[in-house]
Image 1: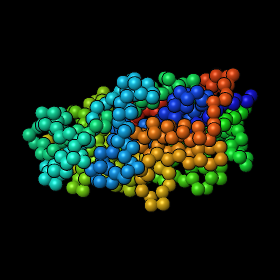
Image 2: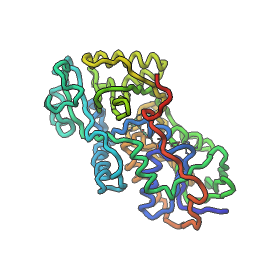
Image 3: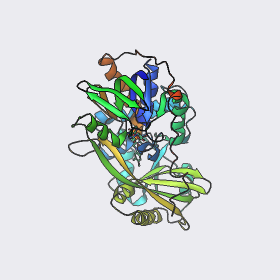
Length: 393
Ligand SMILES: Cc1cc2nc3c(=O)[nH]c(=O)nc-3n(C[C@H](O)[C@H](O)[C@H](O)COP(=O)(O)OP(=O)(O)OC[C@H]3O[C@@H](n4cnc5c(N)ncnc54)[C@H](O)[C@@H]3O)c2cc1C
């Protein structure tokens, strides 16, 4: 059987799902093929913060190119209230603002800078009565700011896409799939006796993009991986959504929180996760715990359950190894390789991909006669680590 479509997307993380939604809107027939569960990889392990670039502005590393990040929170917020490019009204917003706090001893150094004209539109100094509950104690000595950066519950975000676009999403065994390549690019893919033809093939497989590039002999398309070991602890009495910065304004830790049956789980990234990448799980936990005891001396961290999650952040390869400032799209014959670099950037990546297809004169042409769901199952959504019962220490 031959199944012809306009676009095949490989990879059901945020990049592939957002792109699928926008291709449909533009009238293309597009399908998304996922080898595992939706969000497996980076998306489910992300902290769901819709960055607006404040972290870079604070470190004064916001290049003109990276200014685009400033527009992302508003773009996502429009979707959350049903007025944006994707209907995300069923996505849970865990916090309307990510916070930023720093211990009192850095006060004079930072307070002036954060009050400057450059920063005033980005951060708001909170009055103590508006501090997150965990800081509502006389023992807290520090300053707290609010950033216009919402924090989303990623499983419910993925569920929105699955709900709206299930008819175009399939789980397939890509290892058993044949990819037939000729001079002009991918001729077809064959799986379970079905030949899939398309005008363009788009890869949004994160770390696995490079594996597909190798199959297509696109040797210049490479992934760079930034290893992290995230720390997850429960059960905490209150949620917290905040970056704690060190004296160099580097995120010492970034905390997001999730309700569980046994109190809140805190998911911790930042410097802990960067250093943890070259440590054992136990050493990462010990280091994380000593940081938490220093920063929250009024809390008891007894009887915690914890686990660590090792994950690679996947980005397009850069000669200087730095994090790319923008989402990236690279073409090779009839294929495109895409990396959003950040969850927050998924809308911009989809926009740029569609602009690329339009410049390339790719127009909607196909309407397959078979429904995709009659041929393949729809992948489930990946369970987030705080809901998994296994792996806790
Ligand atoms: C710990 C961590 C925290 C982060 N926090 C944030 C944050 O708070 N805010 C933010 O903006 N960004 C954050 N990021 C970055 C963000 O998560 C990523 O940029 C984004 O999720 C990448 O999405 P993606 O769809 O490109 O890739 P992925 O999410 O990695 O998805 C790739 C998909 O491809 C599938 N796949 C793999 N191989 C194949 C194959 N052979 N065939 C078909 N499918 C395949 C996978 O199963 C997966 O579903 C974070 C990243 C990490 C690692």
